[in-house]
Image (cartoon, rainbow, N blue to C red; front, side, top):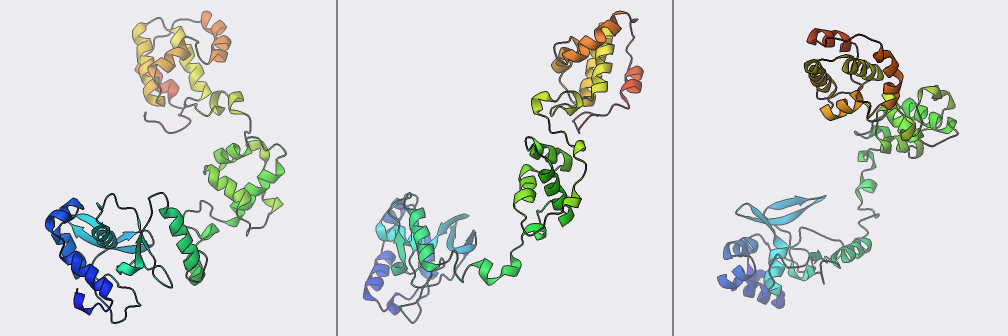
Length: 330
């Protein structure tokens, strides 16, 4: 940096003072002479005093804009924060956010001292930044990316994360929603039916305004289970892993066998197959849970003969009874 090229005598004196700061003072600010020297070498003074001083060294990507950065021992230091920390004599980690007050528009790559201002506090910085964006009209003005390049703004079905393949799927969801008079539980039912998230279902119903309604896209509402979670049981329960047939078979085998080793073999096999804990299976076997099954099968088991539980028998009986959803078992 050529300090003598600075025409404003106040700025020139300030940078001369920055170059003369001792090593001990820089250490007290959380800096050192190498960072200070890299700061001064990265600044180029333009011919006109009215324009910004654009940083000429490295940058750090933080959001949509890159920030001037000084790297020291693999740690980034924002150049304008280093500059203001030395000017105001405050530790760089305790320094409030530094705001850009460039004339005409906010320029994050500017390191001109007269275009920088330290916020009053960390709490006031977001409000000051919001006022600057409103003043520069960077939120909704002609410099906004959505205005400059509307073709690059992907929405609706064109968005890469959109779970819908066609407008027909959205029309079917919306038709089902409007055809059901009782809206309670319809969102959850559509989630189970389609396998997509709650946000996607609600967006298809309320947000995709560009896609017209099509009543003919509706399917049979009888396939949707819209009962309350407390009213669901067996295979329809949200936490169910074992199908109801497997629960009945397990209860029969557990209570028909008098062999302790066979019961332990049954617990290990079913627990591994359906990913359930032994305590949960023991509750089913002793009738502490799934009480409706226990009440229904107890009279049948009372008059049946004892069963010898073997690995071959378990493989044969449970082979067609697959888990209701993927588990850690086999």
